[in-house]
Amino acid sequence: MENKESAVQYYDGQIVVVDDAEQFANATDQHLIKDLGKVLLEIGTILMSSGANTGRIRNNLNRISDAYGYKTELLISHRSLMLTISDERNCYHFNSLKRTPPHGVNFKVVTGISRLSWRVVDEKLSVAQIKKELDRLLSLPHYPRWVILTLVGLAGASFCRLAGGTLQDMLIVFAATSVGLFVRQESHKLQFNPYLCVYFASLTASLIAGLFVKFGFGNTHEPAFVTCVLFLIPGVPLINSFSDLIEGNLQNALIRGLSGLIISFCIALGLLTSTVIYQF
Amino acid sequence: MEWILLLEKSIWFGLAALGFGVLFSVPTRTMAAIYLMGAAGGLTKVVSMHLGLGIVMGTLAGAAVIGLLSIPAAHKRHAPPPVFAIPAVIPMVPGILAYRMMLGVIKLAGTVQPDTYTQVLSETVNNGLKVLFILMCLAGGVAIPMLITRKDSAKHIRFHTLIKD
Image 1 (cartoon, chains in turn red, yellow):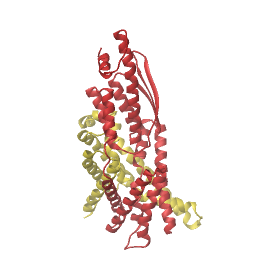
Image 2 (tube, rainbow over the protein chains, first blue to last red):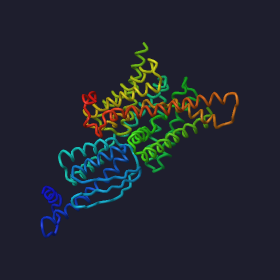
Image 3 (tube, chains in turn brown, purple):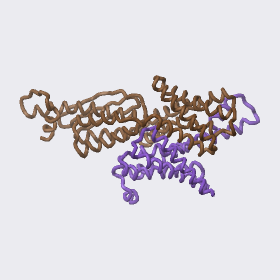
Image 4 (cartoon, rainbow over the protein chains, first blue to last red):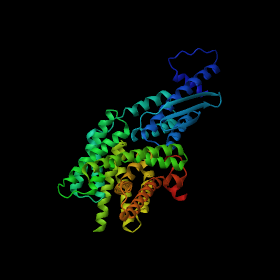
Protein backbone atom coordinates (compact mmCIF):
# COMPACT_ATOMS: atom_id res chain seq x y z
CA MET A 1 0.00 0.00 0.00
CA GLU A 2 1.83 3.05 -1.23
CA ASN A 3 -0.59 5.30 0.62
CA LYS A 4 0.45 3.85 3.95
CA GLU A 5 4.14 4.20 3.22
CA SER A 6 3.93 7.87 2.40
CA ALA A 7 1.81 8.42 5.48
CA VAL A 8 4.37 6.72 7.74
CA GLN A 9 7.08 8.89 6.28
CA TYR A 10 5.00 12.01 6.75
CA TYR A 11 4.04 11.28 10.35
CA ASP A 12 7.59 10.51 11.33
CA GLY A 13 8.07 11.27 15.02
CA GLN A 14 4.36 11.27 15.84
CA ILE A 15 2.92 8.44 17.97
CA VAL A 16 -0.10 6.86 16.34
CA VAL A 17 -1.76 4.11 18.43
CA VAL A 18 -3.40 1.54 16.19
CA ASP A 19 -4.43 -2.12 16.34
CA ASP A 20 -3.84 -3.19 12.76
CA ALA A 21 -2.44 -2.00 9.48
CA GLU A 22 -5.76 -1.06 7.90
CA GLN A 23 -6.76 1.13 10.82
CA PHE A 24 -3.36 2.82 10.67
CA ALA A 25 -3.80 3.56 6.97
CA ASN A 26 -7.24 5.05 7.62
CA ALA A 27 -6.02 7.23 10.49
CA THR A 28 -3.09 8.63 8.50
CA ASP A 29 -5.27 9.13 5.43
CA GLN A 30 -7.58 11.24 7.54
CA HIS A 31 -4.67 13.37 8.74
CA LEU A 32 -3.21 13.70 5.27
CA ILE A 33 -6.50 14.89 3.79
CA LYS A 34 -6.84 17.51 6.52
CA ASP A 35 -3.31 18.85 6.09
CA LEU A 36 -3.52 18.85 2.30
CA GLY A 37 -6.85 20.69 2.52
CA LYS A 38 -5.32 23.40 4.70
CA VAL A 39 -2.36 23.86 2.34
CA LEU A 40 -4.64 23.99 -0.71
CA LEU A 41 -6.78 26.68 0.96
CA GLU A 42 -3.68 28.74 1.60
CA ILE A 43 -2.41 28.30 -1.98
CA GLY A 44 -5.81 29.25 -3.40
CA THR A 45 -6.20 32.41 -1.33
CA ILE A 46 -2.64 33.50 -2.11
CA LEU A 47 -3.23 32.97 -5.83
CA MET A 48 -6.42 35.04 -5.69
CA SER A 49 -4.72 37.95 -3.92
CA SER A 50 -1.67 37.82 -6.25
CA GLY A 51 -3.73 38.36 -9.41
CA ALA A 52 -4.51 34.93 -10.89
CA ASN A 53 -7.82 34.44 -12.68
CA THR A 54 -10.46 32.03 -11.40
CA GLY A 55 -9.70 29.30 -13.95
CA ARG A 56 -6.02 29.32 -13.01
CA ILE A 57 -6.79 28.94 -9.29
CA ARG A 58 -9.12 26.01 -10.01
CA ASN A 59 -6.58 24.33 -12.33
CA ASN A 60 -3.68 24.66 -9.90
CA LEU A 61 -5.61 23.32 -6.90
CA ASN A 62 -7.14 20.44 -8.87
CA ARG A 63 -3.74 19.52 -10.29
CA ILE A 64 -2.25 19.17 -6.80
CA SER A 65 -5.15 17.25 -5.28
CA ASP A 66 -5.38 14.96 -8.36
CA ALA A 67 -1.71 14.07 -7.85
CA TYR A 68 -2.67 12.78 -4.38
CA GLY A 69 -5.70 10.95 -5.76
CA TYR A 70 -8.22 13.18 -3.96
CA LYS A 71 -11.20 15.01 -5.37
CA THR A 72 -11.57 18.74 -4.69
CA GLU A 73 -14.62 20.94 -5.09
CA LEU A 74 -14.17 24.71 -4.90
CA LEU A 75 -16.20 27.83 -4.35
CA ILE A 76 -13.95 30.69 -5.42
CA SER A 77 -14.88 34.27 -4.65
CA HIS A 78 -13.02 37.56 -4.51
CA ARG A 79 -12.46 37.74 -0.76
CA SER A 80 -12.87 34.12 0.41
CA LEU A 81 -12.31 30.54 -0.74
CA MET A 82 -14.32 27.45 0.19
CA LEU A 83 -12.96 23.98 -0.42
CA THR A 84 -14.14 20.40 0.09
CA ILE A 85 -11.55 17.70 -0.39
CA SER A 86 -12.59 14.06 -0.26
CA ASP A 87 -11.21 10.61 -0.69
CA GLU A 88 -13.72 8.52 -2.67
CA ARG A 89 -12.48 5.19 -1.26
CA ASN A 90 -12.76 5.93 2.46
CA CYS A 91 -15.30 8.72 2.34
CA TYR A 92 -13.17 11.10 4.40
CA HIS A 93 -13.98 14.75 3.89
CA PHE A 94 -12.30 17.98 4.83
CA ASN A 95 -14.31 21.13 4.38
CA SER A 96 -13.20 24.63 5.27
CA LEU A 97 -13.37 28.30 4.41
CA LYS A 98 -10.57 30.88 4.36
CA ARG A 99 -10.53 34.63 3.95
CA THR A 100 -8.35 36.00 1.15
CA PRO A 101 -5.58 38.43 2.19
CA PRO A 102 -5.71 41.98 0.75
CA HIS A 103 -5.16 42.01 -3.03
CA GLY A 104 -1.75 43.03 -4.37
CA VAL A 105 -0.46 41.86 -7.75
CA ASN A 106 2.61 39.62 -7.46
CA PHE A 107 3.40 37.53 -10.55
CA LYS A 108 6.47 35.96 -8.93
CA VAL A 109 4.13 34.09 -6.60
CA VAL A 110 1.71 33.14 -9.41
CA THR A 111 4.63 31.74 -11.45
CA GLY A 112 6.10 29.96 -8.43
CA ILE A 113 2.83 28.26 -7.49
CA SER A 114 2.23 27.16 -11.09
CA ARG A 115 5.66 25.52 -11.20
CA LEU A 116 5.12 24.06 -7.72
CA SER A 117 1.88 22.38 -8.85
CA TRP A 118 3.69 20.71 -11.76
CA ARG A 119 6.46 19.57 -9.40
CA VAL A 120 3.84 17.95 -7.15
CA VAL A 121 2.64 15.97 -10.20
CA ASP A 122 6.11 15.06 -11.48
CA GLU A 123 8.09 14.54 -8.26
CA LYS A 124 5.33 13.50 -5.80
CA LEU A 125 6.19 16.13 -3.17
CA SER A 126 4.89 15.55 0.36
CA VAL A 127 2.61 18.07 2.08
CA ALA A 128 5.48 19.25 4.28
CA GLN A 129 7.61 19.88 1.18
CA ILE A 130 4.76 21.86 -0.44
CA LYS A 131 4.48 24.00 2.72
CA LYS A 132 8.22 24.63 2.73
CA GLU A 133 8.26 25.65 -0.95
CA LEU A 134 5.24 27.92 -0.39
CA ASP A 135 7.02 29.69 2.48
CA ARG A 136 10.09 30.14 0.28
CA LEU A 137 7.95 31.70 -2.49
CA LEU A 138 6.27 34.10 -0.08
CA SER A 139 9.61 35.25 1.32
CA LEU A 140 11.03 36.10 -2.13
CA PRO A 141 12.00 39.79 -2.13
CA HIS A 142 10.29 42.41 -4.31
CA TYR A 143 12.44 44.51 -6.62
CA PRO A 144 14.34 47.29 -4.81
CA ARG A 145 12.21 50.38 -4.40
CA TRP A 146 14.38 52.68 -6.50
CA VAL A 147 14.27 50.19 -9.39
CA ILE A 148 10.46 50.13 -9.30
CA LEU A 149 10.19 53.93 -9.06
CA THR A 150 12.67 54.48 -11.93
CA LEU A 151 11.22 51.89 -14.31
CA VAL A 152 7.61 52.90 -13.68
CA GLY A 153 8.68 56.51 -14.20
CA LEU A 154 10.22 55.48 -17.52
CA ALA A 155 7.01 53.65 -18.39
CA GLY A 156 5.08 56.86 -17.74
CA ALA A 157 7.50 58.80 -19.94
CA SER A 158 6.99 56.20 -22.68
CA PHE A 159 3.21 56.62 -22.44
CA CYS A 160 3.75 60.35 -22.84
CA ARG A 161 5.89 59.83 -25.94
CA LEU A 162 3.29 57.49 -27.43
CA ALA A 163 0.62 60.13 -26.86
CA GLY A 164 2.74 62.63 -28.81
CA GLY A 165 4.64 64.39 -26.03
CA THR A 166 7.99 66.16 -26.44
CA LEU A 167 11.20 65.38 -24.56
CA GLN A 168 10.32 68.03 -21.99
CA ASP A 169 6.88 66.48 -21.42
CA MET A 170 8.56 63.11 -20.94
CA LEU A 171 10.84 64.44 -18.20
CA ILE A 172 7.91 66.02 -16.37
CA VAL A 173 5.86 62.83 -16.62
CA PHE A 174 8.84 60.81 -15.37
CA ALA A 175 9.03 62.95 -12.23
CA ALA A 176 5.25 63.08 -11.71
CA THR A 177 4.86 59.30 -12.12
CA SER A 178 7.71 58.45 -9.75
CA VAL A 179 6.43 60.79 -7.04
CA GLY A 180 2.86 59.56 -7.58
CA LEU A 181 3.91 55.92 -7.15
CA PHE A 182 5.91 56.88 -4.06
CA VAL A 183 2.80 58.49 -2.56
CA ARG A 184 0.77 55.37 -3.36
CA GLN A 185 3.30 53.10 -1.65
CA GLU A 186 3.51 55.33 1.41
CA SER A 187 -0.25 55.63 1.80
CA HIS A 188 -0.48 51.81 1.51
CA LYS A 189 1.97 51.61 4.40
CA LEU A 190 -0.23 54.00 6.42
CA GLN A 191 -3.07 51.52 5.74
CA PHE A 192 -5.41 53.88 3.95
CA ASN A 193 -8.28 52.39 1.97
CA PRO A 194 -6.75 51.00 -1.27
CA TYR A 195 -9.04 53.10 -3.49
CA LEU A 196 -8.10 56.20 -1.52
CA CYS A 197 -4.40 55.38 -2.12
CA VAL A 198 -5.10 55.46 -5.87
CA TYR A 199 -6.85 58.82 -5.47
CA PHE A 200 -3.90 60.30 -3.56
CA ALA A 201 -1.43 59.04 -6.18
CA SER A 202 -3.53 60.33 -9.07
CA LEU A 203 -3.95 63.72 -7.38
CA THR A 204 -0.22 64.08 -6.62
CA ALA A 205 0.92 63.07 -10.11
CA SER A 206 -1.56 65.34 -11.87
CA LEU A 207 -0.80 68.26 -9.55
CA ILE A 208 2.91 67.99 -10.39
CA ALA A 209 2.34 67.67 -14.14
CA GLY A 210 -0.37 70.34 -14.04
CA LEU A 211 2.00 72.79 -12.35
CA PHE A 212 4.23 72.74 -15.42
CA VAL A 213 1.30 72.87 -17.84
CA LYS A 214 -0.37 75.76 -16.00
CA PHE A 215 2.66 77.95 -15.39
CA GLY A 216 4.08 76.89 -18.74
CA PHE A 217 7.79 76.21 -18.39
CA GLY A 218 8.29 75.96 -22.13
CA ASN A 219 5.38 74.56 -24.08
CA THR A 220 4.08 71.67 -22.01
CA HIS A 221 0.65 70.48 -23.00
CA GLU A 222 -2.19 67.97 -22.68
CA PRO A 223 -0.29 64.66 -23.17
CA ALA A 224 1.86 65.30 -20.08
CA PHE A 225 -1.14 66.05 -17.89
CA VAL A 226 -3.07 62.95 -19.00
CA THR A 227 -0.33 60.32 -19.19
CA CYS A 228 1.12 61.03 -15.74
CA VAL A 229 -1.72 59.02 -14.12
CA LEU A 230 -1.66 56.05 -16.50
CA PHE A 231 0.63 54.01 -14.23
CA LEU A 232 -2.43 53.54 -12.00
CA ILE A 233 -4.65 51.83 -14.59
CA PRO A 234 -6.13 48.59 -13.18
CA GLY A 235 -4.87 46.29 -15.95
CA VAL A 236 -4.88 43.07 -13.95
CA PRO A 237 -8.48 43.34 -12.60
CA LEU A 238 -9.84 44.35 -16.02
CA ILE A 239 -8.07 41.63 -18.04
CA ASN A 240 -8.82 38.96 -15.42
CA SER A 241 -12.40 40.15 -15.43
CA PHE A 242 -12.67 39.47 -19.16
CA SER A 243 -10.96 36.07 -18.97
CA ASP A 244 -13.29 35.04 -16.11
CA LEU A 245 -16.21 36.30 -18.19
CA ILE A 246 -15.48 34.13 -21.22
CA GLU A 247 -14.77 31.08 -19.04
CA GLY A 248 -18.20 31.44 -17.43
CA ASN A 249 -17.10 32.55 -13.95
CA LEU A 250 -19.56 35.41 -14.20
CA GLN A 251 -19.73 36.31 -10.54
CA ASN A 252 -15.99 36.84 -10.18
CA ALA A 253 -15.87 38.59 -13.56
CA LEU A 254 -18.46 41.14 -12.47
CA ILE A 255 -16.77 41.75 -9.13
CA ARG A 256 -13.33 42.18 -10.70
CA GLY A 257 -14.75 44.48 -13.37
CA LEU A 258 -16.47 46.58 -10.72
CA SER A 259 -13.26 46.79 -8.70
CA GLY A 260 -11.36 47.94 -11.81
CA LEU A 261 -14.10 50.47 -12.53
CA ILE A 262 -13.86 51.97 -9.03
CA ILE A 263 -10.06 52.29 -9.42
CA SER A 264 -10.56 54.03 -12.80
CA PHE A 265 -13.11 56.29 -11.15
CA CYS A 266 -10.59 57.23 -8.41
CA ILE A 267 -7.97 58.04 -11.07
CA ALA A 268 -10.47 60.28 -12.85
CA LEU A 269 -11.43 61.92 -9.56
CA GLY A 270 -7.77 62.78 -8.85
CA LEU A 271 -7.38 64.30 -12.32
CA LEU A 272 -10.65 66.19 -11.89
CA THR A 273 -9.51 67.66 -8.57
CA SER A 274 -6.36 68.96 -10.27
CA THR A 275 -8.30 70.49 -13.15
CA VAL A 276 -10.54 72.27 -10.61
CA ILE A 277 -7.51 73.53 -8.63
CA TYR A 278 -5.69 74.80 -11.73
CA GLN A 279 -8.93 75.86 -13.47
CA PHE A 280 -8.01 74.35 -16.83
CA MET B 1 10.78 58.27 -42.62
CA GLU B 2 7.29 57.32 -41.43
CA TRP B 3 8.46 53.76 -40.86
CA ILE B 4 11.32 54.94 -38.65
CA LEU B 5 8.79 56.84 -36.52
CA LEU B 6 6.71 53.67 -36.20
CA LEU B 7 9.80 51.69 -35.16
CA GLU B 8 10.66 54.36 -32.60
CA LYS B 9 7.18 53.94 -31.08
CA SER B 10 7.79 50.24 -30.58
CA ILE B 11 10.77 51.08 -28.34
CA TRP B 12 8.47 53.08 -26.06
CA PHE B 13 5.80 50.37 -26.08
CA GLY B 14 8.41 47.88 -24.87
CA LEU B 15 9.68 50.22 -22.15
CA ALA B 16 6.16 50.88 -20.85
CA ALA B 17 5.51 47.11 -20.76
CA LEU B 18 8.71 46.58 -18.79
CA GLY B 19 7.70 49.24 -16.25
CA PHE B 20 4.41 47.45 -15.62
CA GLY B 21 6.24 44.13 -15.36
CA VAL B 22 8.35 45.52 -12.52
CA LEU B 23 5.24 46.99 -10.88
CA PHE B 24 3.62 43.52 -10.94
CA SER B 25 6.94 41.97 -9.74
CA VAL B 26 7.38 39.44 -12.55
CA PRO B 27 10.34 37.01 -12.30
CA THR B 28 13.58 38.56 -13.56
CA ARG B 29 14.06 35.92 -16.29
CA THR B 30 10.81 37.00 -18.01
CA MET B 31 11.74 40.69 -18.40
CA ALA B 32 13.48 40.52 -21.79
CA ALA B 33 10.54 38.58 -23.22
CA ILE B 34 8.07 41.12 -21.83
CA TYR B 35 10.00 44.00 -23.43
CA LEU B 36 10.10 42.25 -26.82
CA MET B 37 6.43 41.25 -26.69
CA GLY B 38 5.35 44.75 -25.72
CA ALA B 39 7.40 46.16 -28.61
CA ALA B 40 6.09 43.58 -31.12
CA GLY B 41 2.46 44.11 -30.09
CA GLY B 42 2.83 47.89 -30.19
CA LEU B 43 4.51 47.74 -33.61
CA THR B 44 1.68 45.57 -34.94
CA LYS B 45 -0.84 48.08 -33.64
CA VAL B 46 0.83 51.19 -35.12
CA VAL B 47 1.54 49.47 -38.46
CA SER B 48 -2.06 48.27 -38.79
CA MET B 49 -3.29 51.76 -37.93
CA HIS B 50 -0.86 53.17 -40.50
CA LEU B 51 -2.35 50.80 -43.08
CA GLY B 52 -5.79 52.19 -42.27
CA LEU B 53 -7.22 49.47 -40.04
CA GLY B 54 -8.56 51.84 -37.35
CA ILE B 55 -7.66 51.97 -33.68
CA VAL B 56 -9.99 49.22 -32.46
CA MET B 57 -9.00 46.55 -35.01
CA GLY B 58 -5.36 47.64 -34.76
CA THR B 59 -5.44 47.04 -31.02
CA LEU B 60 -7.04 43.63 -31.55
CA ALA B 61 -4.22 42.71 -33.96
CA GLY B 62 -1.56 43.90 -31.51
CA ALA B 63 -3.13 42.03 -28.58
CA ALA B 64 -3.48 38.87 -30.70
CA VAL B 65 0.24 39.00 -31.57
CA ILE B 66 1.06 39.33 -27.86
CA GLY B 67 -1.28 36.46 -26.99
CA LEU B 68 0.31 34.16 -29.59
CA LEU B 69 3.87 35.11 -28.54
CA SER B 70 3.03 34.47 -24.88
CA ILE B 71 2.82 30.69 -25.51
CA PRO B 72 6.42 30.11 -26.74
CA ALA B 73 7.64 32.65 -24.17
CA ALA B 74 5.91 30.67 -21.42
CA HIS B 75 7.65 27.46 -22.55
CA LYS B 76 11.04 29.10 -22.84
CA ARG B 77 11.00 31.10 -19.61
CA HIS B 78 8.89 28.74 -17.46
CA ALA B 79 6.11 31.08 -16.36
CA PRO B 80 2.35 31.16 -17.10
CA PRO B 81 1.35 33.08 -20.28
CA PRO B 82 -0.62 35.85 -18.46
CA VAL B 83 2.58 36.86 -16.65
CA PHE B 84 3.93 37.95 -20.06
CA ALA B 85 0.72 39.02 -21.72
CA ILE B 86 -0.78 41.33 -19.08
CA PRO B 87 2.20 43.75 -18.73
CA ALA B 88 2.72 43.65 -22.52
CA VAL B 89 -0.82 44.78 -23.46
CA ILE B 90 -1.16 47.55 -20.87
CA PRO B 91 0.74 50.16 -22.97
CA MET B 92 -2.09 49.89 -25.53
CA VAL B 93 -4.70 51.12 -23.05
CA PRO B 94 -6.22 54.30 -24.56
CA GLY B 95 -5.46 56.84 -21.83
CA ILE B 96 -6.03 60.00 -23.87
CA LEU B 97 -9.40 58.80 -25.19
CA ALA B 98 -10.54 57.87 -21.68
CA TYR B 99 -9.49 61.32 -20.43
CA ARG B 100 -11.42 63.07 -23.21
CA MET B 101 -14.46 60.94 -22.46
CA MET B 102 -14.24 61.94 -18.79
CA LEU B 103 -13.97 65.64 -19.67
CA GLY B 104 -16.95 65.24 -22.00
CA VAL B 105 -19.08 63.56 -19.32
CA ILE B 106 -18.28 66.43 -16.92
CA LYS B 107 -19.27 68.96 -19.56
CA LEU B 108 -22.51 67.08 -20.26
CA ALA B 109 -23.34 67.09 -16.55
CA GLY B 110 -22.80 70.88 -16.32
CA THR B 111 -25.00 73.73 -17.53
CA VAL B 112 -26.67 73.03 -20.87
CA GLN B 113 -25.45 75.23 -23.70
CA PRO B 114 -27.85 74.41 -26.57
CA ASP B 115 -25.49 75.22 -29.47
CA THR B 116 -22.57 72.98 -28.40
CA TYR B 117 -24.40 70.28 -26.41
CA THR B 118 -25.07 67.91 -29.32
CA GLN B 119 -21.49 68.08 -30.52
CA VAL B 120 -20.06 67.36 -27.04
CA LEU B 121 -22.54 64.49 -26.67
CA SER B 122 -21.54 62.82 -29.92
CA GLU B 123 -17.81 63.24 -29.22
CA THR B 124 -18.17 61.83 -25.72
CA VAL B 125 -20.19 58.82 -26.86
CA ASN B 126 -17.67 58.21 -29.66
CA ASN B 127 -14.67 58.34 -27.32
CA GLY B 128 -16.41 56.25 -24.68
CA LEU B 129 -17.38 53.49 -27.11
CA LYS B 130 -13.86 53.43 -28.54
CA VAL B 131 -12.41 53.02 -25.02
CA LEU B 132 -14.87 50.21 -24.26
CA PHE B 133 -14.17 48.29 -27.46
CA ILE B 134 -10.40 48.76 -27.21
CA LEU B 135 -10.40 47.34 -23.68
CA MET B 136 -12.47 44.35 -24.83
CA CYS B 137 -10.10 43.80 -27.77
CA LEU B 138 -7.08 43.87 -25.45
CA ALA B 139 -8.51 41.17 -23.20
CA GLY B 140 -9.96 39.16 -26.09
CA GLY B 141 -6.75 39.22 -28.14
CA VAL B 142 -4.73 37.87 -25.24
CA ALA B 143 -7.22 35.01 -24.77
CA ILE B 144 -7.08 33.89 -28.44
CA PRO B 145 -4.45 31.08 -28.16
CA MET B 146 -6.25 29.44 -25.20
CA LEU B 147 -9.57 29.66 -27.05
CA ILE B 148 -8.43 28.14 -30.34
CA THR B 149 -6.35 25.35 -28.80
CA ARG B 150 -9.06 24.44 -26.24
CA LYS B 151 -6.47 23.49 -23.59
CA ASP B 152 -6.56 24.21 -19.86
CA SER B 153 -2.82 24.65 -19.49
CA ALA B 154 -0.26 26.27 -21.80
CA LYS B 155 2.08 23.40 -20.96
CA HIS B 156 0.19 21.21 -23.42
CA ILE B 157 0.22 23.72 -26.29
CA ARG B 158 2.90 23.33 -28.93
CA PHE B 159 3.05 25.48 -32.00
CA HIS B 160 2.72 22.62 -34.48
CA THR B 161 -0.47 21.42 -32.77
CA LEU B 162 -1.70 24.98 -32.89
CA ILE B 163 -1.29 25.05 -36.65
CA LYS B 164 -2.77 21.56 -37.12
CA ASP B 165 -5.83 22.48 -35.07
